[in-house]
Length: 131
Ligand code: SF4
Ligand code: SF4
Image (cartoon, rainbow, N blue to C red):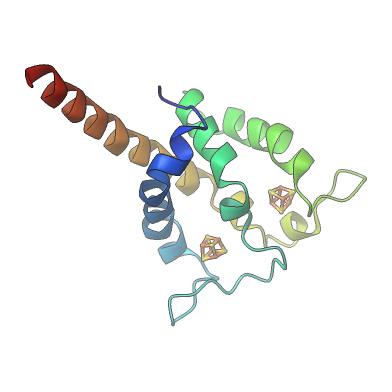
């Protein structure tokens, strides 16, 4: 069950809230009015690629950050509209990609959200068995 993209729609609010709480609140682009002030004209890559990030967080279980960086570059950056044909990214080179800048926080937030969801699923499953 864990890690399936189909879970995204159902539990989207849990993942979005986790990102807002654990990443956006610490972000240099988080405005005083609580809105995102990113210069990315397409919007922050975290939310543009959230379903894929949720999937990675649900399926990759590594203790080091390098595998997460490699997977994001391979599965997300390659398909990101901000990537240049030569493989460079003007947002990343300016440290203006929210995803690249807060990669560790992003995966910590999503892992935590998955834990919340798994706990909910277990509780529901136990309740159904006792019905
Ligand atoms: S740039 Fe990304 S991480 Fe930063 S406030 Fe905007 S949405 Fe959140
Ligand atoms: S680093 Fe660039 S290519 Fe990768 S997700 Fe961010 S904006 Fe997209």
